[in-house]
Image (cartoon, rainbow, N blue to C red):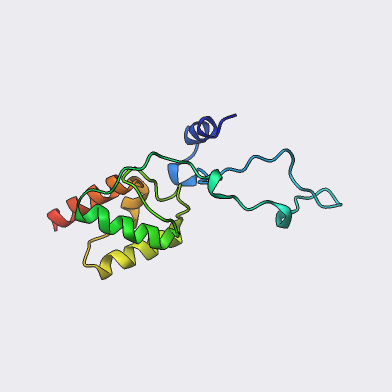
Length: 134
C-alpha cells in the first residue's frame, strides 16, 4: 500500500496529530529468539521515510520567523508554507518549546492552535489573527 494511501486510511480513524510522521517498509518485524519484537533491531527511518510536500517558500514576516523556529526545533534544513509540524517530526514537547520561543520573539502563541492548524501557513495565519484580537 502506498504511504499516502495508508496515511489517508489512518486519518479516517485517528486525529491528525496521532498519525505517524515517518513510515518504514519492512518485509518482516525483527523478532527475538523468544518471538517478541526486537525493538533495538528496528531500522531508524531515513529522510526518504518522510512525507514530502512540494516546497513553497514562506510568505510574510510571521511565516518566515515560524519557518526558522520550526527548522531549528525540528532539525530540518528548510520549512515550506505547506509543511506540517507533526509530519516533520514534531510532537507535543516540541510544540511547547515552539510556543516558548515564539513568546521570546514577542508573539502570542497557543499550543492548541498548532494541533488545529499544523501547517506553517495555517498556523501563521492563526497566530496573526490572535495578535489582531489582542
